[in-house]
Image (cartoon, rainbow, N blue to C red):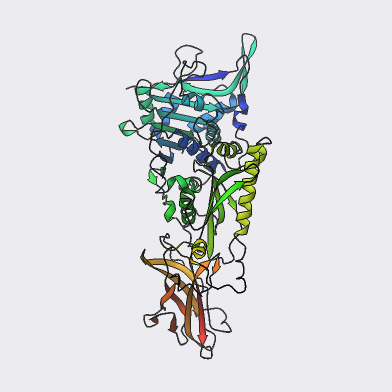
Amino acid sequence: MRLARLELHSEPYGGTGNIGANFRKLLGAPSLDTLETVIREAVQNIADAAKLGRGPGVLIRIRTVTDAQMKVLRDRVLAELPQEEDSRGKIAAFLGSKAPAVMEICDFRTTGLGGPTRADRIPIGTETTDFIDFLRNVGTPRDSPHGGGTYGFGKVALYRASRCSTILVDSLVAGGGFRSRRFIGCHVGASYGRPERGLLRRYTGRHWWGARDAPGAVAEPVFDCAAAALSKALGFPRRSGGESGTSIMILDFDLHEDDIRAVGRRAAEVLLWSFWPRMMLDAGRARKFECRVEVQGRDIELPQPEDFPQLHLFAKAMRAARSGAGSDVRTIASRRPKKELGRLAIQKGLRVPRRALVETGSLFPETCHHIALMRPVELVVKYLEGAALPDERIEWAGVFMASSDDEVERAFAEAEPPAHDDWIPNNLPKGRAKTFVNVGLRELRNHAIEMGSPPRPQPAGETAGPPLARAAGQLGKLLAGAPGSSGAGPTGGGAQGGQRPRRASATRPVLARLEGERDEPVAVFETMVRQDSRQSGTVLRATATVAVEGAAAPSAGMQDMGLEPAVVGIKGPTAELSGNGGQLAINGSEGRFEIRVRFPPDCAVTVEAKVLQCSDP
């Protein structure tokens, strides 16, 4: 069929005024960069639209537009340009560019943008107003209990991400039927005036491309077959089997002069950083996000949170926060007024070598000592940084989930700024809600700081081995089921180059990989042995202990509780240099050695290595 040619409607000021050019300023000044803001805002709106009993599919695509698609944009979609000079110039520059970039944020198995298409003509009894809330009105209050945020502010971020402040929207409304497929274009620019019949006619700077049934009428979206034809011609994702949802194309997406594939990797990291709780395997069928990132038609790696070294401790803490059962689950509460505010779960474990998604500027810290803050919708609001553990080989991660009690959830939701990236008590008036947020943040900060405190000394007269229940509550959990690593080991050059040490020594062992089955896991650590000038080091001795509170635990009593790890073998740089147990005769040899440790499931272990001389005991 012949493609529809869209008409431009520029919004005039009404008799009582309009929001005008300040629309772009409604988001305020987010602490996040443009890419992070647009993904967070868009995916939060997707979460609110996922009401069909199954979690949504989320697809982020970054690509350049083909010549054929650009022709459709110039001749059929954006054939008429706004009269305001700046808006006209930016859109024209995009239409004339050689390698025009777009970003598409698409959701599937969601409700789509249903309901009336005009904000001034809403049939009595209408319950769904998603189309006008997203494309006409601004700042509509959230319509989902315990939802992601204020529906509508997310679109401000979309326009900011476009260098020509223009988006195209293709939506298929759940349930099908007449006018269920909808296509429309939108632009937000500066307000301006135009002389008409001796008067200055003022315009808000908002423009729509669609179908107008009369001169001067509001531009409606094109519907059904005409909408589907335009969507296909522009390369929007297909919606096979009538899969409802919405696709938003951000024209002239601002890459900030970065490589387009690097931007895609960054997008993948943003998804993990903000939405990993909803990407977990046990997130639940109705809530789980199925996410993809695609650049120029090729998928970008998006690891499972449980298998990603930067997130696997958070994932374990999340499971504990959901269930209320774990090694360290704490209740955060207010005393006056008396109210349970939420649940804090903390997980400790050995720091596993990182897997980089981006080359520079990663969102993830090198060592984790943070609490992920979220409401019951399970979208990360921010990360609260705490104190690191004394042993840098051990890290911790926490999850705080605000209570699902309506009064408490509403307090934390209303403490969020429009970008949903913080909890700010001063956003609330004096009263119970402000007290809840203030007390919650104060208690969380205290817990985060105390995590880095050294373990308390054993009181005199007490046995060195703690009771089993207490030990279980303190043990850091990592190695069983931990994600694989790149095999990065200790640095150093063995015998080649550099000044010889005064005494033969071994570097601190670092985790290289995991082997064996889950019920009998084996951790392989690596250490670098260097000899002194006399090559006096004759034996390499390795010991392993369970880590408690970020430091090595006392060994007394651990064996009785079945919690004592064991060094089962040491292997040197040559086949001859290997043996069972925790000691290996090296007789002056040096280089990289592997230490194999069998450990109790779900426990963190720390390993020490020492080079002995003949005179050592």
